[in-house]
Image 1 (cartoon, rainbow, N blue to C red):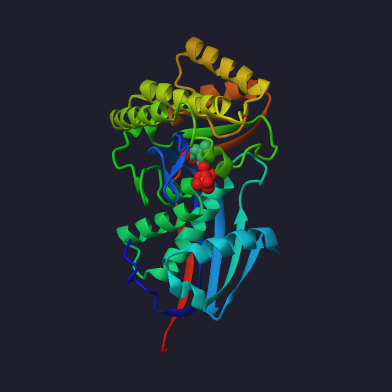
Image 2 (tube, helix red, strand yellow):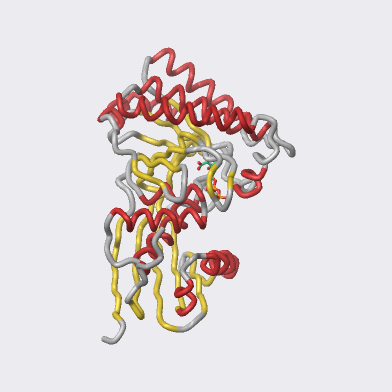
Amino acid sequence: MSMNSVSKYSFGKVTWKCPSNIALIKYWGKRGHQLPLNPSLSITLKNAYTVTELAWEKGEGLDFYFDGALNEAFKEKIKKYLDSLPYSFLKEYKFKISSKNTFPHSAGIASSASSMGALGLCLASLIKNEMDEDFYKLASNLARLGSGSACRSVYGNMASWSDEFAIPIKNIHENFKGMKNSILIVDRGVKEVSSRAGHALMENHPYRERRIQRANENYKNLNEAIASGDFETFGAIVEQEALELHALMMTSSPSFILMKPKTLSLIENIKTFRQESGLNLYFTLDAGPNIHLLYPDSQKDKISSFIKEQEVEVLEDEMGCGPELISFEGETYGN
Ligand code: DP6
């Protein structure tokens, strides 16, 4: 990543809206500095997003507001993150960051993806002056350094990630347009295992090498299914990846079982419904018990009655078109 594109803004502020994403091929395990063991691929969501305003002026210090209130815990994390970035000129600025999410902290949606995505975009606006392709690579790289999955959130629709920054999936068949993601909330509790600790479990995992191979195969086959519009192959790979993530967690030491009995009974219901209806209803899971249903927009009416019958809390989402620049004001040096 070029570090020559130093900003000319002495003070200003920028606001970005950045959605969360749900992985279909799972990032699980790290190599080097915040790089993934295997390629991952995700859908960018629409309704679950973070809005972050970054204000800067010459000076030093950081204030971090979450939902309108100063938040010391988040501030410490973000300070460490800012200090770790390879842009030393950032140390000449005093920052005020204000962030809010559209979804509750405990809804089982990864908030690090949208929040670090939004912050990565804000910082990219401060560092680089043009919003070209390289801008998004820079934003994705900055987001990755904060949270791996966040680097995929800076693009709309679908994105994949295997190195310093994520890239958008270009070849998406129209069958996937407007794909729905209904999140069945099984448990609103806080995550039992942090992502950081979870990724570390892959270091000495007995299935580590096989997992890397398998993720690469799944990644290749999923890309093909996405390009050809093959919803059935898409669904088979996505479900297999979700269960493999949980299988890896169950077979690591220490071991984690993050699915709840309700997660399993919902999975059974999904499979039965699919067999009986012939509809393209599939599921994926994050590192938690909640179920992310995936299905074509064209089948949403029939599938919504199935969802209602499950009698669980549901968050409705769908594939979205990516981040949005809400506002930018920058005052240049010497003006
Ligand atoms: C299971 O991106 O939260 O959601 O890089 O340590 O911040 P850090 O981890 P994080 O891990 C996400 C793991 C996952 C799968 C995925 O999103 O690909």
